[in-house]
Amino acid sequence: MSFLKKTKIVATLGPSTRDIHTLEEMILAGTNVFRINFSHVTYSVANMQIKMIRELDQKHECHSAILADLQGPKLRIGDIEPNSVVSVGDSVTFYSDKPFVGNVKKAYLNYPHLAKDVAIGDSILINDGKLIFKVIQTDKKSKIITKTVQGGDFESKKGVNLPNTRMTIGALTSKDIEDAKFIFTQDVDWIALSFVRGAEDLLALKKLMSDFSEKTFPIISKIEKPQAIDNLDKIIELSNGIMVARGDLGVEIPAAQVPLVQKKLVLLSKKARIPVIIATQMLENMIDSLTPSRAEVNDVANSVFDGADAVMTSGETSVGKHPAKVISMMTSILKTVENADLIKIHLEQPKNIQTTRYITDSICFHAAKIANAINAKAICTLTNSGYTAYQISACRPSAYVLVFTSNKSLLSQLNLLWGVKTFYYEEGTKTDLIVEEVNQIALEKGYVEKGDFLVNLTYIPISEKGMVNTMRITTI
Image (cartoon, rainbow, N blue to C red; front, side, top):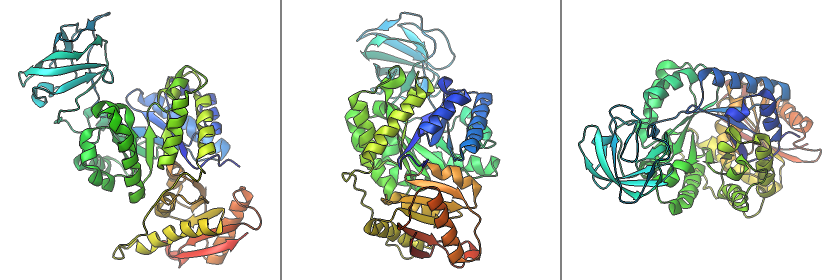
């Protein structure tokens, strides 16, 4: 049976994963979602990788999801003279008007509003916080003077974080806008928006989508700014998924706070019934090594215990030496821990009877409860929008969530959701016939055996393709 696990794996593509053989190995090892990072890819390479993934999907009769990740306003310093080292107390001046080769005294920073946005006392963190500078003077135009608080190697092109500064630039840069227009033309399933701070960032991407795309792509908000934590309710309301981007988040806020933020984000995402991805440094030791550290194994396992829908690789698969082996290791960890009794996901029964989705929400909630109570092996649901898949997956039933749909775009899109397996199915006109047919598919694919219980969800009348309003318990 090809259903290896319920927790999904998101694998970042890169130079190490540009041949079809490696991609095939990764799919067979357990990759469910491929992430294309538009910080480091050309359109021609992205297009090539998308086509290879879809070719492999056809070959192996699977439905890999593809996540296009926009770069966002990623700040970087310019080129620096080799062997430059700054020490505590050194004065370093940053300029944002035009690029130049810097040194231990001055450097270019690619954010034109830098001098205007920062205030005296703000921190500038470089290279994931390895270097820290304190702003002591700004001309509010293009020049700021800083004092080195934490020194070290001053290297070219390193990333910059401004944890105390409210930036005036939006989450969509001019590069992101052009990248998004390209993405809209591609066979991808999700778009990730980087450095989200509030509702306005998501609304800007939705507006761009409505203006330039015939298709609506679900949006994953990457939480990596302190301002996002302050605006979580609205961000989650406008998002189709959440990514806990622990790399930049761990620089922007104190590292000790990241585990609590991670748990909070998972809980809020489950309450909203949207998927949540835990990302960054999951098995980073495997960039070069064939084995992860014990701490990394615990990190992956604890993400499952928290209730994550998916865990994500970054450098491990994009530039690492053993991308398929990374996926195999992650799959092994997930399969070992994801069915443990230690995992408890507590969701409240839907209470707002005024919503049009109340009946469907209630049926999905109780379907998961009943499936657990009778030890059903699968919950089979018909859907045209994917809504029931989100609802049931969030409840974390012990049963597989088998989703049958005639909406081909959902087949790969829903592959990000915990526990969900999708099948293409053209609905008939008789409920009894449909139940028999989808149950037969579940049997043939090996998800159930003779004598097993299944929970079937459907809509009546079938011809209207409406919201789920019927639950039936069936024995194979």
